Image (tube, each protein chain N blue to C red):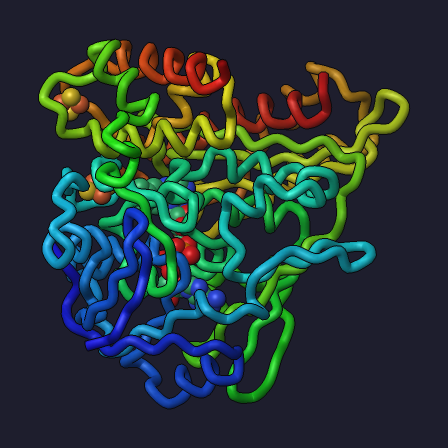
Length: 155
Length: 284
Ligand SMILES: Cc1cc2nc3c(=O)[nH]c(=O)nc-3n(C[C@H](O)[C@H](O)[C@H](O)COP(=O)(O)OP(=O)(O)OC[C@H]3O[C@@H](n4cnc5c(N)ncnc54)[C@H](O)[C@@H]3O)c2cc1C
Ligand code: FES
Ligand code: FES
C-alpha cells in the first residue's frame, strides 16, 4: 500500500491505496464520489473526466498514486453554495442529455474547454469534446449548451 | 479491468530512476503519463512487477532554448509542448502534429518522451521529429549518450534505447521561418492515423530551398520520404511540382495491411496526403 494525500472537491483526503488503484476507483469506491462514472475499458469515452490541478484528465487512465499531492475537482465539486455551475445549468436548459451517462464527463471537459477558450466556435467545441462520446444525443444540444454557457460566462 | 498488482517507485532524481531501472531490470517498466501504458496494463497485456514513475523528476520536465535548437524534456506534456510559444515559433510542425494527437484529456497527461519511447508506428510524433532531424539524449548505468533520430526508431514499438536506459530529453534543431504541416487521415475522432504525413518546407523567392517529409504508419517505424524531398529541392513551389514529387511518397516503404486498409491503399494515401501536406507547408 502507498499513502496518498490530495484535495478532492475542496476537502483534504489521505488514504493508503494499492498502487494499481485507478483514480476513478479511488474517487468512487474509497471517497464515495459516484458522480464520476466509468463508461469504457479503453480510455476512449471520457465519461470519467475530472480535473487534476486545473486540467481535464480521464480518471480511468491515471493511477491514484500518480495523483498524490494534486488537487482534483469532480462533477460533485462544480456547484457552489447549491448554485449549479453555468455549464451544468446550460446542459439542463438546452436538453443536452438523454440517459445522462456521458454528462459528468461532458460537463467537466466543457468547463476545461471554456477555461482555455472562452468563445469557441461550433467547430472548436466539437474538436474540444472529441474525447467524450455520447450514445444518445447526437451531440447537437451538447454543442448548443456549451455555446449557451460560454455566453453566460462571458457576460 | 484494473492492472495486475505491482510495486510503485516514484524517484525524484534521474540518478535514482536509473538505479531503480538497473536494479529491477526486466521486471520493471517506466511510467510517465501512463496514457499508452495504463490501457496495456488494464487489458493485462503486460504485467510488470515494478512501475518506476518518472513524473516526479523535475529535471525531465520543461522546454528550453539552446541556441540553434529547442530542448524538450521527456516528461513535458503534449499540451505544454503544443501551446509553448518557442515551439510554435521555431518548430511549428511539432505543435501542429500534437494538435491532432489523441484528445484534450490525453494531451494533458501524455508526455513527449513517453510517446516517442513507446515508438508506435502509428504514433503522431515520430514522423515530425524524424523530419526535423532531432537528437535523443538517453541515460543509463553507463552514463549518457545521444542517439540521432535516424537511429532511434529501431522496429515495431522498439527504440534503440537499451532496457536499462531512459529518455531524458529531445533536442530539435530550430526551423525558424520554415512552413510546417501535419496531414493526418483518420476514420474516427481522437485516434491514431491510418497514414499521416509531416512536412517542413523552406521557400525562398518562390522556390523550395529545403524540404523534409516524414511518414507515419507506412512502415514498422516512422520513415523519411527522401525521394519526395529530393524531387522538391530547388524547384519552383508550384502545385504541379508538388504533385509530381508527392507521387514518390511511398517509394521504399513497407506499409501494414489491417482492418483500416491494405498496403496499396496506404501507398495511395501517402502520396495524396504528402501533396496536401507539402502544399500547406509551402503555402502554395
Ligand atoms: C484515447 C487515446 C487516444 C490516443 N490517440 C493517439 C493519437 O491519435 N496519436 C498518438 O500518437 N498517440 C495517441 N495516444 C497515445 C498518447 O500519445 C500517449 O500519451 C503517448 O503515446 C504516451 O505518453 P505517456 O507519457 O502517456 O507514456 P506512458 O504511457 O507512461 O509510457 C509509454 C511507454 O513509454 C515508456 N516510457 C515512458 N517514458 C519514458 C522515458 N522517459 N524513457 C524511456 N521509456 C519511457 C514506458 O515504459 C511505456 O513503455 C492516445 C492515447 C489514448 C489513451
Ligand atoms: S471510462 Fe475513462 S475514458 Fe471511458
Ligand atoms: S446522454 Fe446518453 S450517452 Fe450521452
